[in-house]
Structures are given as C-alpha cells and as structure tokens.
Image (cartoon, rainbow, N blue to C red):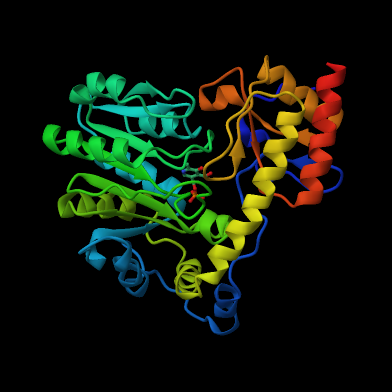
Length: 350
Ligand SMILES: Cc1ncc(COP(=O)(O)O)c(C=O)c1O
C-alpha cells in the first residue's frame, strides 16, 4: 500500500463507498444562470490576457473606486497567487505566511524564488505582537480570512492594524479572500489600501471549482501590468467560456449565496457537534468549510482512514500542523453522518 503523503493522491477521487472529507470543493451546483450560457455560446478565439472586459467591469463595485484595468481574471485563485508572488520577486524577498497555511502557499513562494517566514496562528488567530516583529523584514504578508484549514476569521481590529502597519512600512498585503462569502460568525473584513492585493475566486462562492476562474485586484497599476505580462507568457487568457459563466453567476440573484450559507451552516453544526461528542479537540468554524481537529499521528490516521474505512481526510502536516487532520464538510448531511460513524469506529479501534 502506498503511503499517502500529498493531497494530489486524493484530488478528484470520490464515488462508490468512499466518503470524502478531502478536497475543499462545494458539491452544490453553480447558479442556473451560469449553465444557461452554455446553450448559445459559440466563441472560440483567444481572449484578452487580463480577462473579459464585462467581467472586470462587473467586479468594480466590490472594490472602492476600482477600475476594470486593475483586475486580472485568472485560472482560479491558484494562478492569481502564483502570478502575484512571481511579480513581487526581489532578490532575498521574504513572504510572511500564516501557519497553519493553505497547502499551496509554501510551494507558490518557492516557485517565485522568494523566501518564506511564518507567523504562527494561535488557536487559528493572528497574534499582533509576533507580527509586529516580523513585518519590517518582509516584502509581503499573506492573510487568509476566513482560513483554510482553520475555519477561523481574523478580527476586524487586527486586520485594520495590519493595514496600517503595512502602509507605514510600505509592504504588500496579499489578501486571499476566497471564502469571503462563507462566514457564519461575525463579518468578513476586506483589507484595503494602496499596497493590498486582493485575490478571489468563483470556485467556492459559486461552486465552480472545475471551471477555474478567479481573479486578482490591485490599485498598483505597475504591478498589475507586470502580472499581465507574466500571464501572457505563462497561460495567456483564462478560459473564455468559463469567464462568461462566471459573469452570469456574478449577476445572478444574491439568494443563491444566502441559501447556500444556510446549507453550509447546517453541515458545520453537524460535523462540529459530532466531533465534539467523540471527544475531539477542535475549533468551531467561523467561516469556510473545514474543521481541523487534533488527531495524533495524523499521517498514520489518514492512511488508515482511507485504506480501512474508505474515508478521505487530509494530513495536517500538509498545512504545517502534523498533529491535526483537516476535514472538509463540502458534502451532504447523510454522507457527513456516515463519515462521522466511520471516524468514530476508527477512533475506537485504533
Ligand atoms: C485558501 C485558498 N486559496 C486558494 C485556493 C485555490 O482556489 P481556486 O480553485 O480558485 O484555484 C483554495 C482552494 O482550496 C483555498 O482554500
């Protein structure tokens, strides 16, 4: 049996008897308006590298006084992260990443030939004192709130303080906002300022993971132009059909998002309460759709859960926390219940 040591082993796996708490992709379909685009769509030519004009125009209300030229539509938030970091390259440049982190961040930083420094989250929260010590040396800090894998939301006051410090120190802030619409407790706070680069995606909000549409926004036009130049030689335009679908999703009634949030809340309560009853130590998610309980020897646990109990969960080590396991609750309540049963059995038998 192959030891499972990367999320790539699981991505795209599912079906049959498998219960997957693995990949963070919504099982809920995109808005009907997005699919309606398919009926009449006939374009097939290259599109603008920076993205569809109408889509960039439709995004301007999200960012105060923004212009369509400040956006780049990308192959998901993943490409936006990659492009932003590559554009920020300076010799010896240091990027401050949260720990635990979304598993791609350290790779993205390394691919951009930048250096990594981590700021530790305590119970999923930023500790300003620690950050203050590290910020002056950094080229950029990355903030992910709500967070994958912790499910926590950072306090508004803390984020405002970071905004202020970054401005004073002339440091970029990369805000990975892909879970901005998935907040159960409190409110999402959008970091703002000249040096803030916002990244968002249609994957989570509109259940469009496989279509690969995300974007970045920055008021720094030189940086945006540099990013477009890199994208020109890396991937060219983002899929034109998928961008039309994203535009239709964006224009669809807000009910879609509100209704889905109720579904996510129900799932969150079920998995959180179920794990608490098993005696697991975990945070109650404030946003996104992950729980991150303490489970010792996480790698052994995820291997056994998969091979013996047909249950997929992700090793906390992939997120920088080897004594935790990440469970995504992007699946229906019956499956969550069945998954919890299997987990309980595993914990009793191990
Ligand atoms: C925090 C975070 N950022 C970025 C991504 C990448 O999303 P996309 O599908 O838009 O590439 C993910 C996906 O799980 C994520 O959790």
